[in-house]
Amino acid sequence: MRPLRFVALGDSLTEGVGDPVGGTWRGWAALLAEGLAPADVPTQFTNLGVSGAQTRDVLERQTPAALALRPDVVSVVIGVNDTLRCTFDIHAVAARLDTVYAAFRAQGAVLLTACLPDPGSMLRLPGALARPLARRQRAVNTVVHALSERYGALHLHAAEGAWIADRAMWSADRLHPGESGHRQLALRFHTLLAGAGLATGTAPCAEPGLPPPSRSAGLWWLATAGTGWVARRCTDLLPQLLTLAAAEVRHRARGTSARLDLSASHAVTSALAALSVAERPDAA
Image (cartoon, rainbow, N blue to C red; front, side, top):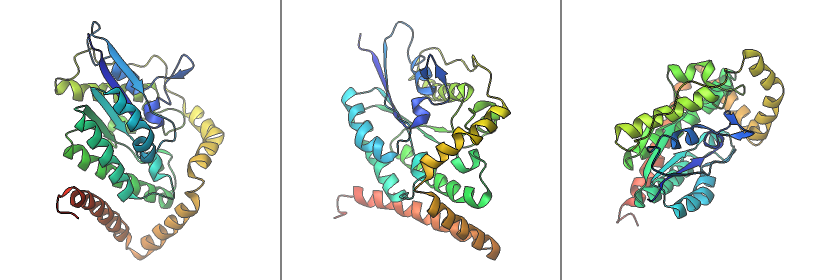
């Protein structure tokens, strides 16, 4: 019997950071893989997620490896790290995701996608610093929404909601789900697949085996490892983020903050329109 093949692409979220088991990371994708088919049907699971990955990494490295495996189900959950770089370009993000989604759908794979919360709010950064990051994540989420619809993906809305706001869902670093959060992601993806008649195994258990990290653990992480994590992820972004924050303060003082949102909205519209034009036979 040919095994059901599930391949997961993405960054540390897909890698499983925040859900340690046996000296390694497990994560939502591994939990989901266990429930895709009944116990008597073999499932072949490959996790290509790598901490720090951006959409470029998914396109250039992970996608060719995944296509070679000819998956039946493939998840592509990516984009947060793009927002944390000074090179952020929603046009490039949209073009890369469009290429990736199209490649898997052309192979006939079931495509799983998700929108995600913005890192600024998760880290509880000051408003002037958080708002530019939130605007970028909203742009990525809008693109993911639009392309998910275009390619018939099963899309999980994971950018907001009561379960996202629940501190017990998150690990001490406040950026990655803890065991409970990973279980919720797995369960909600399983519900989408089961609703489409594509997951026939037992749904992942929602109850964690370990208690959530304490508030003191979160504060300790922020005071120690957290500083290093932010520095590694945001070194090239910081000068630009400070400039963006200064612009936020100026516009807020003038009552013109809506202009920043409008500009970001126009950029997303332009990025998606460019993809539509590129697909037309007479685009040349």
